[in-house]
Amino acid sequence: GEDVEQSLFLSVREGDSSVINCTYTDSSSTYLYWYKQEPGAGLQLLTYIFSNMDMKQDQRLTVLLNKKDKHLSLRIADTQTGDSAIYFCASTGAGNMLTFGGGTRLMVKP
Amino acid sequence: NAGVTQTPKFQVLKTGQSMTLQCAQDMNHEYMSWYRQDPGMGLRLIHYSVGAGITDQGEVPNGYNVSRSTTEDFPLRLLSAAPSQTSVYFCASSYQSGSTGELFFGEGSRLTVL
Picture (cartoon, each protein chain N blue to C red):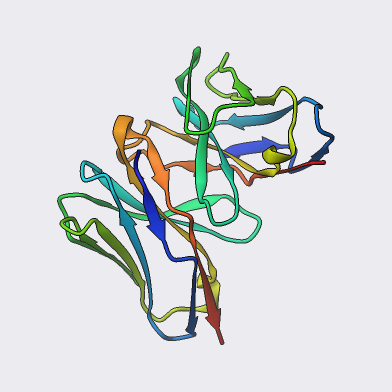
């Protein structure tokens, strides 16, 4: 089945940019998503990108998709302490089911 | 509009006990699903439903049962709890499965099986 991989942890200083990376295996994935999970809460959709796009920008968030390498990244500009959370990459695979990566814990130091 | 509501938030069980995690949504979503979240493993799909009366297995269905008698409710039953089922469980719903169907998550139910 589909495999989605992310690094476990990222630490940045407040005001710096954060880049969270994700790789996936299913080349037929139609949509790729970034979800954010704050402590003690469920996941919330941050943004998504359709597979025929290579970039999407939404305020401080930039999503880059390299379909050839099956690589997705989320860049957060001017990272704030409120951005500290776990970020999940997810991909639609067979049957339009979502497969989630293991999550990247972002820690923002003041 | 409460969104997705899960109960209980916390539960401790002994091995072999049974229990039901409740999930309700008030958004008239057709698609509902249950995930479990374990450290470093992301979310794994247990069961899902694309509408009332229809359920199907996800990636890790063993040890769990579901039913969908109404659009609003999607309970998850543990028939005979095992320590391997210690996890955080999330219910999620969307207007449609996959595609651009944004998943709305409940706040989670933390289950410990001793």
